[in-house]
Length: 252
Image 1 (cartoon, helix red, strand yellow):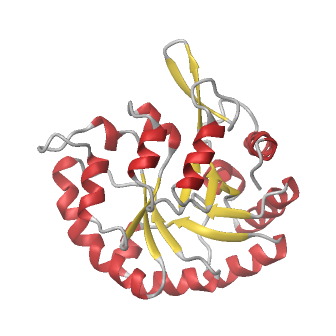
Image 2 (cartoon, helix red, strand yellow; image 1 turned 30 degrees about the horizontal axis):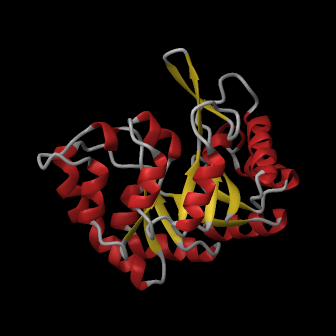
């Protein structure tokens, strides 16, 4: 399993194309070979392709604008093809339990077109999908897995938000086995009763050696380091610490 950076962590360094390109080079200098593009300034697919090549990086996953995915599906596919990305993701759905069927009705046609183009639609969870139960007594995540067939949607399982929502990431990895080609490594530090995000390896709640092994067994090929909140630390230092830790436990 290869490790990369979710650029949402470095979003403050990607507010224009020049700083975006420079950030890609800094990520490559750390040792990363791949990124997930999310939270950056606007870009054209061909520009991103050139910037990635200049830095010696790939992008195998995005978080893309949902309205473009469902309303401009063909263009979305073309843009992703321009920089060689086959996994088209969204950062989440926040329409509540009552909006799940509407979300499925909107997204399934686009997901089919994405599949027909040789790509896969991806869903990233937060905590609410675990904290809220549907009328059948199951979580939103469980129902999403039923509403979307495995060949039409994968899950970018976020370890931190899974744990924050009260579920064991190891159990979720087993449950979603085969649907986790691209995942998020996000660590948690419990400070008294307060849950904080930490660089991967800097937490005190989750065992990432076990988590990494479980993801590999579940078929994950890429794990993207993400830290939404660096708690006053330089985000670039955080992704460097995450890289060093993950390399120390044998990941590439």
